[in-house]
Image 1 (tube, rainbow, N blue to C red):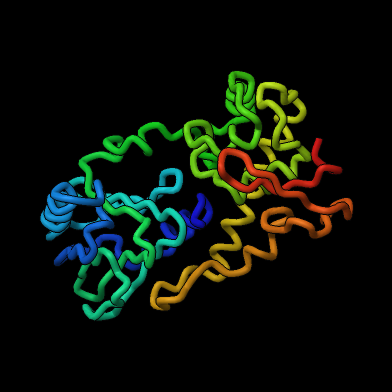
Image 2 (image 1 turned 90 degrees about the horizontal axis):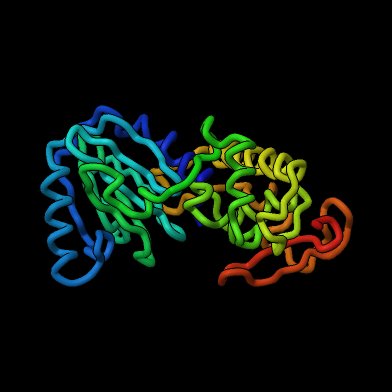
Length: 276
């Protein structure tokens, strides 16, 4: 599942391939990959994407939350990876059959693939046109993500802490994996009311979020994504997680068993002994 560190690693690794390059042709191979996803609307969206991308130059590759953004000299291409979407690079125009959208350049083809077709690719004049981007909250790697800003949002929320952390309108790009890890590192119980977190606990949580995400990004970049390998995925993340996916195993801090509960339809992993 792609969260902030994975998408950030893709953006950084993709820049050398496409920055400053002119798109010769855009092909929408599976219309389900474009918004709104079905029916006549999908056909129009596919035609718009192909028409606006053709001849455009890529000025920048960036990220907002869990979205990958290709800034063109006219508008932007926006991608959301959802569960397991991939970027792939082909040195020719011959591409994998799993590719949903392909951008052809003089020196190769960039493909956006998702075997389950959950990811979305679309063209907009501004990312703010997409509600999911327009409503995004604080970026954890930005100066705006200060201890004060986090504490204010915690105090104003009636949500349990885990659901607060998953709310993209509060913190952009923090998903299920790294919210579990941040709470474990900060020794905070997932079901506690966000507004009940003390000042010292908020300080621990702020530090934990930044530390967890930076460590995950470093892991995602070493090794960096190999876009030429159709089977590439991020390696080594399982070595840095302390609670996520470790139900029944020993806590790496106290030795007690890791537990799993469901919150908001998502699995929450925690140590009932360490996290209070």
